[in-house]
Image (cartoon, rainbow, N blue to C red; front, side):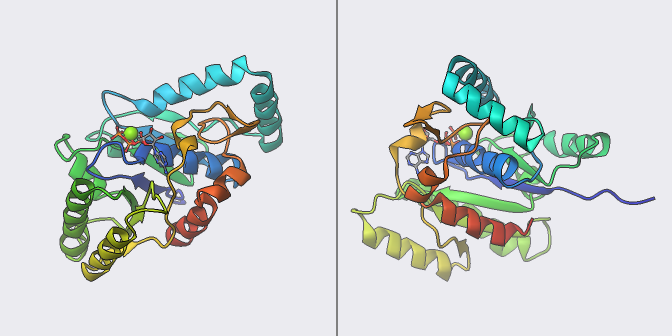
Length: 255
Ligand SMILES: Nc1ncnc2c1ncn2[C@@H]1O[C@H](COP(=O)(O)OP(=O)(O)OP(=O)(O)O)[C@@H](O)[C@H]1O
Ligand SMILES: [Mg+2]
């Protein structure tokens, strides 16, 4: 009997809301699945909002109602010859079992499974689930509360649980998101130093603050940015440094 290839489980996760978890899950999932040839599956565990499932529904409508998008999608799906990646609804305390069942039962084993988890440790089962994720990427923003809670939580995961081999985690990587280049350079410098002093991993790429993140799957000057059905336009990636981010991301997760 041959053992099945196991997918790499990845979560954009922090204990703070509104920092970019769901946005990054969508952007990276779409690029890997539609442009780079990987098989992606998403488990949306953010009960009760289920923002990714809702986004998929809105993306479907947006694409059907716009001729340019419809053509783009048609061209894409005929050329890649595979379906949109599935987005399943789950819960933080059930998702590990559901992944196991899904992988055993499905014909195509995904290369990557993304989990979108709630932004709070108070959710049942979340710690147990997080310690079984292979790679955690945590967006941080220049906000004292975001930083303090994220750093202390990441510190415990990295310097206590991972060191005691109590987890399946292979890496936890923080990254600066929503960076406004003109301001607070000292804050970024000081916190980046603190992060390295704590022995935590910080990604080199910083993502700029950009209005296009706030736009959903609609057309941005005849291109698309955040959509669960189409990958972001390469030109738009460059402007906020997501192209560099993906390169660094792939080096870390070694798919
Ligand atoms: N680099 C960026 N520049 C500008 N806006 C951004 C950036 N990254 C994320 N945002 C915006 O921040 C908001 C929150 O993002 P998102 O919903 O992904 O966060 P979240 O961490 O999943 O939040 P929640 O905890 O509510 O699930 C969204 O409107 C998103 O478009
Ligand atoms: Mg979210």
